[in-house]
Length: 86
Image (tube, rainbow, N blue to C red; front, top):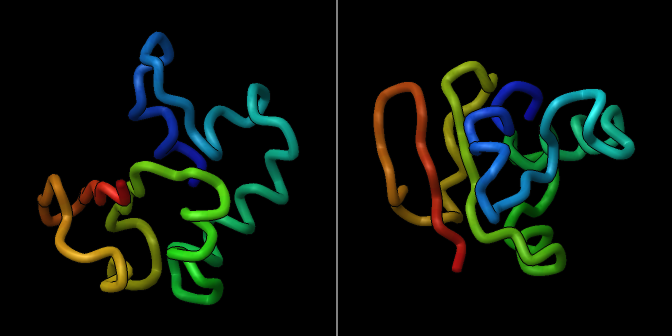
């Protein structure tokens, strides 16, 4: 989601699905897709597998609780959770 991708350091080997608005190709559509996935409107597990997503970051500013299909978070705090997919 917008802003969350900024938590991943720019000089790490990891990339984000949605990062800074002017550095993310197709930013608007990717933001809408990420919101649908993180709020349970689309199948996040299928998307993660198809797009080789390794981690999912959830923050308390999302309107729904974190997706339970991802299992327990690898990092857990009241406002920020990181799920390791593989």
